[in-house]
Amino acid sequence: MFLAAIIMFSRFISIILRPFAGIIRYGALKAMKRFQRPDDRRPIIATSDHLLNEIILPSVFRAFREDKFRELAKFEKLPVVEHDRIFNELEVAGICLAVFYLRSAKYLARPEDYHFWQRTGEHLPKQLQKILTSYGASGSNAKLIRELIDMRREEYEKIAEKVWEASDNLNPEFRDWTPEMKHFAVRIQAIAVGTTDHIRRGKIKEDDLLIKHLAGWLMTLYIKIKKFVERL
Image 1 (cartoon, helix red, strand yellow):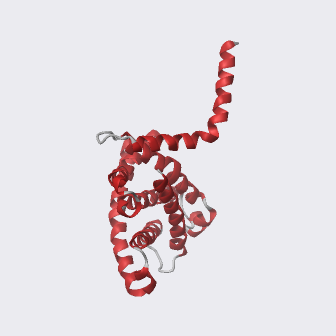
Image 2 (image 1 turned 120 degrees about the horizontal axis):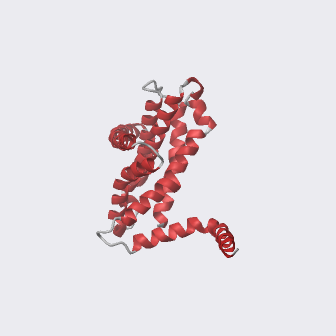
Image 3 (image 1 turned 60 degrees about the vertical axis):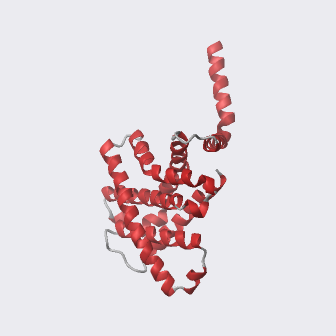
């Protein structure tokens, strides 16, 4: 009877605290970051894990299941194995966006936080590998996704350079943007173009509506990551 009462009370408390779980986690992250020691990687790991589990991966799942995306990607004509490959490309796109953002700490963070966000960006692919393994993915498959992120990141950086050059030559308004606006606008467009190209397996058109759709999704994700970084 006493044990049953304790269990009931525990469940009651968990129900009460559930709405505050996000606030509690955020407060813990903020404290870890503020009082971190130079040799302590736990704040980096915890922040990477939060970014992935609370912001990036949920956004990827929503984008993948969205009817408009599936229509533009022509899901009904593709086998299930292609669906899995496309999900991986979206996952990699979201991670690359976060890595690009966190690596550019000079645009987004207080000077004293520069190294913290640099290290967090570097750790993100490794943390994703751990998360995938915890979900049941084989070690080899999780490692392949991490390697794919590195490969795509280099590829999208090269595309971004071309987008920057074209924008600078063809769009007079682009020249008046702040360095931060330029930096992330070209990378969002580069990731959208590159991801569309991989989803289409190279059969991409210049006016492909999927590029615009993915750019809109990436912009929304960028804003969420930006708000998190500025608040922490």
